[in-house]
Image (cartoon, rainbow, N blue to C red):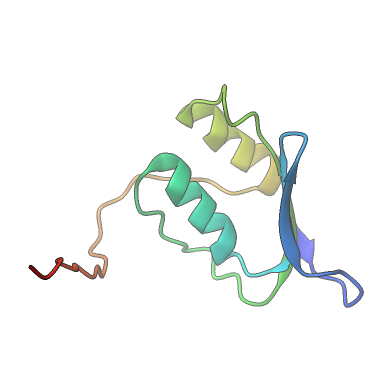
Length: 95
């Protein structure tokens, strides 16, 4: 993970089992993790600004423990379970 360089092209791509985020805010990484775990993931890193991230993961064969270890090994990030209130919006379909 590094600060985005001024010459980098912003975007997100996935190729050969790797996610690449270029010149992107960290909440995009958090969104992918929330989708994978099917649970809310709360960003408490304090990362502001735009960064470049690269995460190599075999998404089809990974279990939660392996993904957590990859995050720690590759990005230096630790996912920890917690209980805290979060804001949600409930939308009901009108009849």
